[in-house]
Image (tube, rainbow, N blue to C red):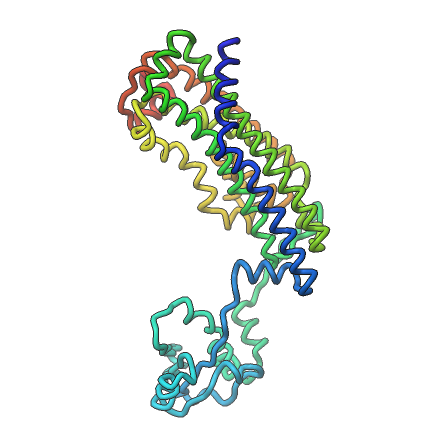
Amino acid sequence: MNKIWLVFKNEFITVVTRKSFLITLFLFPIVSFLIVLIVGGIQRSTGTDTGDMIQELLMPSAKVTLEGFVDNSGLVTALPEGYEGRLARFESEEQAREALTDGEISAYYLIEPDYLENGTIVYIRPDFNPLGGSVQSSSIDALMAYNLTGGNLDLYYRLENPLILTTQTVDAAGPERDKSNPLTFLLPYAVTFLFYIVIMTAASLLLSSISNEKQNRVMEVLMTSMHPREMLTGKILALGLTGLLQTVVWTGSGLLLLRLAGQRFALGAAFQLPTSILIWGILFFIFGYAVYASLLAGVGALVPNMREASQLTTMVILPMIVPLMFISSLIQAPNSTLSVFFSMFPLTAPVAMMTRLAATEVPFWQSALALVLVALTAVYFVLAVSKLFRAQNLLSGRQVNAFTYLKILFGKASE
């Protein structure tokens, strides 16, 4: 026990005294609070709505310019109300091209004679800019819709999108979030990346520590004075505590930040994360970290150096990346079958469940069951990897591919 404590103390002090760790630990809360204070000051001085400010910051509105159109189909009889400064009619393509050359318009559309048959409209602009070209596509859409429906744009928009399905849960707790507010997406998005970064950073530190000690021959000295499993236990506990410290500081400051933002910006109650998310966050971090730290520790125990380890690391952390690939589905449909599966599968649950908890109300039994499954998986991997922590593996190392590592991990091959 004394040797485990010595390893624990050395690893913990080494990590928490690094400038990089201290900067990342406190920089995020400090910068976030400064942003809230600055944005709050701007809001009070300008009277701008917070949602509009966030929307403009994330997706700046493009400058609307005057564009022309040439109607060769004979369908356009009038411009929709309010579009006089966005679209200008030209009787021929020569006139439109001359106006484009003189800088009077930024681009023009050619409505083909057979538009009713195939819907073809040619877009001519002086530069290749697919993003800029799509910004004002709503103008020509509204022009054609207005004339095709006899001036009834509401009819066109309803035909284009006949069904807007809203799902309401009878036992839903708390107010519903406004889906048009950017915070509806940003809150779960931030929580997802926070837990991914914290878990993977803490787990990767364990792999780096083991690999560096093997390369620097420090491992040979350690093996003469302690059992390999004592070293594994001390390192996992120390680096886990540093990650837990980050989780508590970041999550706690995030909750405090939302409370402060709610007072300054009058955010609705729907955008206040429950305090229970901090408790769930701590629990899912502990067991999620145990899963991936043990897996990466197994990689470090088997391979001879960090270069060889990096090839296996991608395979090990792949399940953690999968929820990031489906983050839109997790946030927009947190109770779908796919979202529930990711939040229950032990290797994706630490990130996916936290995303769901930040996006919606999750039934307690689902959160508890996911936590139990992750905990059981962590126990299995810790026990399996502890068998790999032998002096022969730690002092020599060998080339191991992903398939061989999985067979060793699940007891299908000898170490």
